[in-house]
Structure formats: C-alpha cells, structure tokens
Length: 69
Image (cartoon, rainbow, N blue to C red; front, side, top):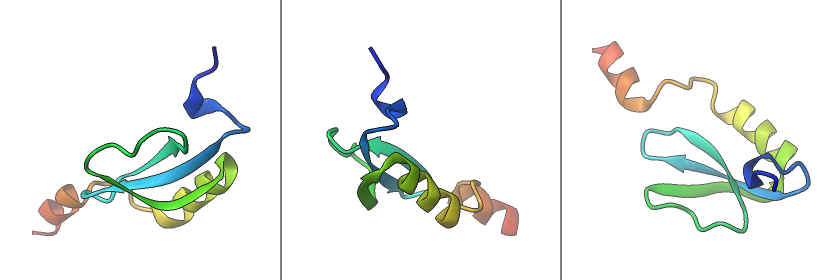
C-alpha cells in the first residue's frame, strides 16, 4: 500500500497552522484541528510549488519572535 502523502497522482491541499508552518495534506482527509487549508485541492507538484513560493522561512513564528527580541 502506498502512503497517501506520497501519491504523485493524488489531489492535495496546503495547510497552515498558527505558527505559519505549512503541510501537504491529501484532499480526501479531513483538515486536522489547528490547521487551515490555504491552497488546493490541486496536483501534488502544484501544492509543493505553492509551499516553496510561500514558506521561505521555515522557522516557526514563535521562534522568529524570540530571535527578534
């Protein structure tokens, strides 16, 4: 059985949490509590491109705030 997160032919959504961390999520699965869909459903490659374009600093927001103070 193939891991649904690795399915190249599947439809995905990009999720974001309150720390602005991004996650690729299979479209058929419910969005977990604390996460919001911000892109998709779309092809896996399109979702990965969205993440690469929109999540340039992977440091969680809370850690960025600490570093700035």
